[in-house]
Image (cartoon, rainbow, N blue to C red):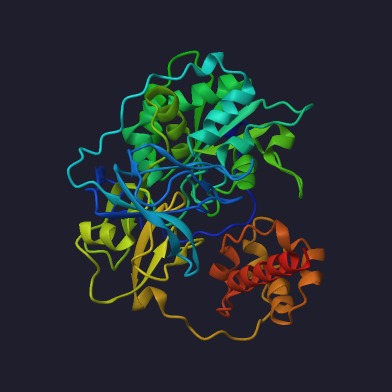
Length: 446
């Protein structure tokens, strides 16, 4: 009997946005052709920016490390192509800011093959060396947060990981890249699980997949060998099922206390793409230089699931998909609930870019906001049992210290409150703005 069936499963609150996955759910992953120019931002992960190891004019090979981790909570960068470094310049990020990036001109005559490397004997590595290898490979959480993966595996003394929870929920509308990975690369996923289970000393792994992916569930179940400490759990479709704490509650019926992490209750949570990347590094010596991206939305001419080298301009990815329809008004990086509009189509695709979604006027029109009617729907939607309407009022009054007192930092900005609000109040945008103001204030004080 599965853990889900044993406990009854599910988590409280949440919302049910339309899935909109039919455009790409059955489209196999395609490879995007190589482009002329790539931009590799030094800060495309949570934590300290990477430090460049190359300079202008230097020749680089595909897969070569071009920037080292800037701190423990940081990770390395590798060249997505064989070519020449044009320079290190201030380049536009998807959010519109300008920050340092390594610009590379691709060699038009290169085959762009990654040089074969011998498999790494991960089983013989001490845990510290294993963690260093993950950091060296540049692997981050590929579900959208881009948190350096190796940090999760540095377990404090006195703690023990007993369970590995694999996030295959993919609850964001439109996105199907994880779905296709589970169908097309199940053996790599299970290999990554095997590696991590062994190194963490965990007893069992559970793959949580929403029930709207029955083909992925079936493929994974068929690949799991008898006696293998891995099971697949089918979850009801609800947003934000893929949030770490919600997934833990849904699968194990256990809550992670406020202010604590999953490791504090013996759990490590990883996205399916992250585990595939771990298998690719240890078995093939392939660092994180490309990722699977869903291109979709009413404004996309040819929706698709693509494997794209990091640093590829969004404009070129869309051009490969036939461009944008004339009525397109906005392009979002990520999913529609937690993603952000891109400032320009010339920004690069990053490690956290799970989707490129094109929307028309019908989806992006901002209806006028009305006063809060105290209906409580945002409270019913919030899976963290916070008070979003109060956050919104305090944010507008710039009472940020009071927001912190009522657990502002526990908010993961999932957007369920904004989705549920009948008054069209941009609650999550107000929360994000408040958090940004708090961070700026902290930096200024330092």
